[in-house]
View 1 (cartoon, rainbow, N blue to C red):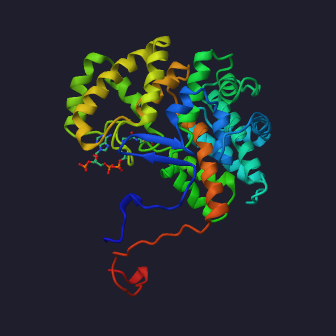
View 2: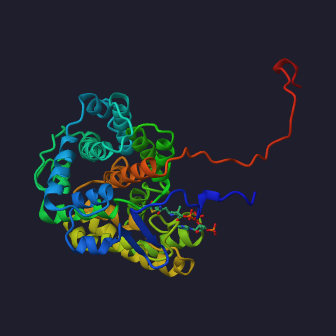
View 3: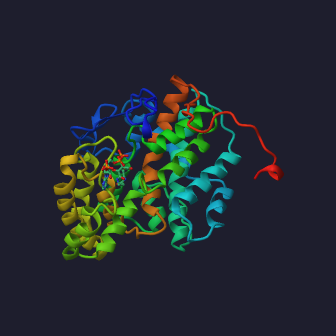
Length: 381
Ligand code: ACO
């Protein structure tokens, strides 16, 4: 049994030039650039998408070419839209994204090829914008809006999803969310996708596998689970009692707290918290949850801090999404997380398949009975 690394903790499955995390000091860098520097320096989501696929920040002409490849992906085949709209409005938003990507896997001819992988990845990033906007509008019973590519990826997405011109504040927050969630080395979703593409299955199937893993409440589903906890608590005054009854007693996990790698405050959570502070007053529910979250964070850090369990990015991101006008519905916050993370998934897939490909096929340690003889069912006592 000592051979097993439960949860593959501390197992290195690939090397990467994409992202580095210092979990002790709370540092996250993309190809050397800290996320704080990228956000405060005014980086656009599309520049960082380019950085992930090409390893360097783009010059202006390079960015224009890249953006036009992404924009070509905004047009998705009609059967992809139908894969979303034929399913019930009550469907899980990430499962709808999976359905859309599975239908792209069915129709698109794809072969791994160094000369075209990045072009396909750019169009997949475009596909994801339309798919996510369509998913959001479908679960909310709204007519679909064709993306109008003006003002960058964040603004184009918000316009297509919300069906109105976003404010500058909303676009800035969406742009930051896209960057903050863009990659995080090899969490469960990226690893699930890597297992898929290690079989040389296609890029759309890799995304479908990654989405399936992201959906769970211990991973991407935590943003929604955190908001559900804030809603259950209801108000600032009720936090202390709820915390005693549910968390101190060990009955439940505090959602949005704890991380496999960070032993300190997640740097992404710090930035999301600043956006939450700025945007929450626009929306009465978001403001109420923000106040609950502030008190809950205080109690959570006092209780768990000595064990290295601190707020992760999902503790604060839901409040930011809610403040931008996205109601809590059908796991939509996890679908928004996926809209950002798709770039990291694609970049890791390309890095793995092009440079270090080998089929991922681990072993299991057998602990069942020794050799036995089959007894037909009629003779079993
Ligand atoms: N609330 C209460 N206890 C916790 C929490 C939490 N949020 N997180 C960890 N612990 C405790 C566990 O109960 C366990 O205690 P024990 O050793 O006494 O049994 C110990 O810390 C270790 O927990 P594991 O689940 O083994 O640690 P792991 O490294 O797998 O945890 C995880 C990572 C799954 C994220 C965990 O912290 C958790 O469940 N958090 C809540 C869900 C969440 O917020 N997920 C989002 C992750 S970030 C992201 O996906 C973007």
